[in-house]
Length: 226
Image 1 (cartoon, rainbow, N blue to C red):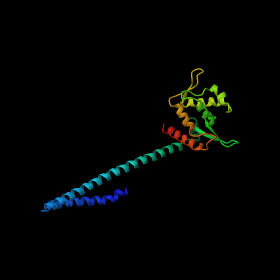
Image 2 (cartoon, rainbow, N blue to C red):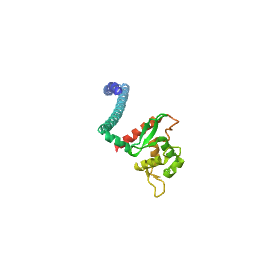
Image 3 (cartoon, helix red, strand yellow):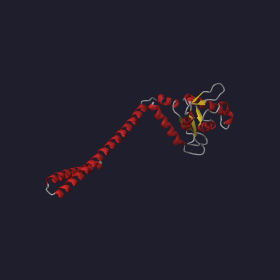
Image 4 (tube, rainbow, N blue to C red):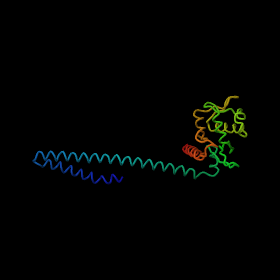
């Protein structure tokens, strides 16, 4: 904007000088002086036109950026207004539809847990191992959890909770008969994103908070947009 304001007087000067030179060219009897003034006048007018076009394009770009930023701010305010109108019960109910990760205090420090249906929890490192042992086609069978995840307490129960959680959110479908649950299209990748699998490693890296906040913010935004 400041650049446009600085160049405007210069454009006016160029335009005036160009017109004056062309008028003078028509009035002079000296052929050479007339040609020089005519060429100079045309050059100054062309310069002024070029600067004017550049100003118009710059101004248009600034208006687009302003409208875009205004729209973004308006959308953010709208989301905040929606959240502010929610009752405590409604906010609590969002836990059934959002991937919520809680830090539970323990004797050896906080334990990260994925909140599943009905406010039950699954250890986040259990969820990581569960996803690691699953394939991109099907979930780890619940019947195998007690053996393959035997280092975790209540492994079968946690496997059931996690499987039900993924099915409830549409990331997986229940298997027919004794067959394990199957991932829906893109469900395996989304399950990894929801839990932060692959971006954090519990017990080896202390950056769990950043990943969890990122996941929760993204999913909160998606629910509000829907």
